[in-house]
Length: 76
Image (tube, rainbow, N blue to C red; front, side, top):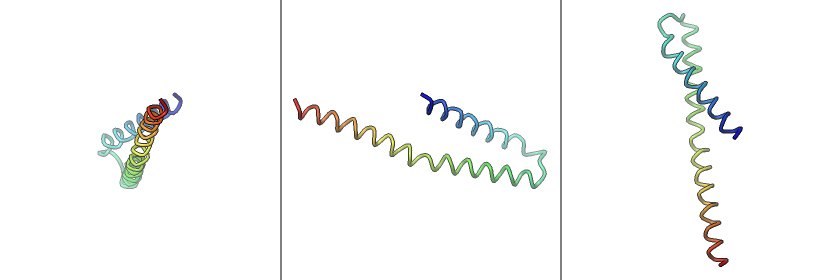
């Protein structure tokens, strides 16, 4: 349950940062805009890097579930 809360907080923070970056573009100096662009790219890279982990986790859980079901059938 703690991991779920952490994921929710991280996703919420990423959405807030992305929204603030996109709405605050007009009044920013160049250096601040460059920093926000860098931050946005870093967040996007982090989100993109989590997809392979998420897919592997889902496939692993599904594989273990299927293995347990097959083992139970073979045992009985």
